[in-house]
Amino acid sequence: QVQLVESGGGLVQAGGSLRLSCAASGTIFAINVMGWYRQAPGKQRELVASIANTGRIRYADAVKGQFTISRDGAKNTVSLQMNSLKPEDTAVYYCNVFTDGINYWGKGTLVTVSS
Image (tube, rainbow, N blue to C red):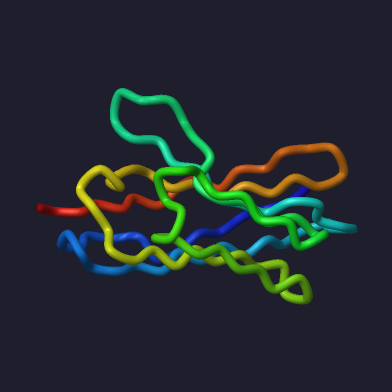
């Protein structure tokens, strides 16, 4: 079993920055992919960014050049630096870990960007 704890959400004005962090703990043998998803009100959950243990990084088109994902494999943590935030970035952000064939999710952290 893997537990994910997210931190770093909050309220920010448009143009501001936030950094989200997620720490994975529990019985972890090898994490394949760590990433962030978000779900805005009335919308489906969508991938924001992911980083594999191979180093491959994926970003949603909407956040390319704006967000940066990073990972500390030794500490099993993943972070998301979010810059130039826009009101449309408002959502609950979920940490995701794929390991041993199972997807694990954090409880989510709310990011609100005011205009």
